[in-house]
Length: 226
Image (cartoon, rainbow, N blue to C red; front, side, top):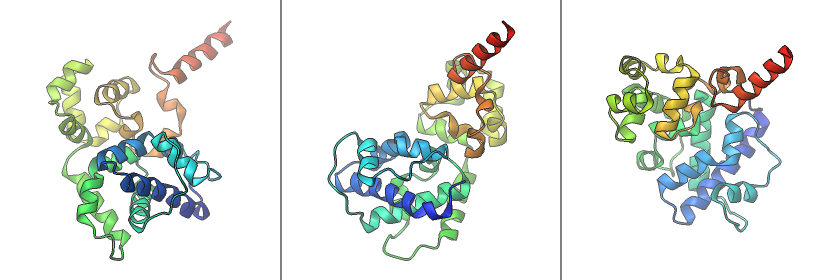
């Protein structure tokens, strides 16, 4: 759980990332990609955020280049706070947030110079997620048919069809299937979890031989046997 008195500091760091990206001509899609892969955001999603990190260093690690001191823009602050509030309320990864509400659509939908009612923001985002299931949304973005996903992952088509009909089935998928889907669709595994709180429970990943946690677990298990 993110402590309330840290939230403004986190918003400032996200706002600085948005500000730098927009001020330096990065496309909306590229800004999304940088945020999704940002060490600061990855740690934030694991509830391991470093609030002592300097804002400029957070931006540098996100974009992979040295930056000058950043004056956070109003637009950057608006976006940073909006996406952070969605992240906090829905407990979903930024990759999930951007999937259903891409930055380009968000900027077009909301006028940043008007006061935001964040209850409306949550309601509007929820409506977006109700339009289609997660797997269908990802398949559409990657321009893949469900039958192609089945063939490329080796997951039975009936299982894929079930995952595509209701997110609760996808959220209950084995780690093996989550790993195959995330590898094919090139997304982080935590997008397939119902809540980031589940991500903090490492045991959810201990059932596939390609996972390092699983290997470490097996090593410990066999050491005990010996």
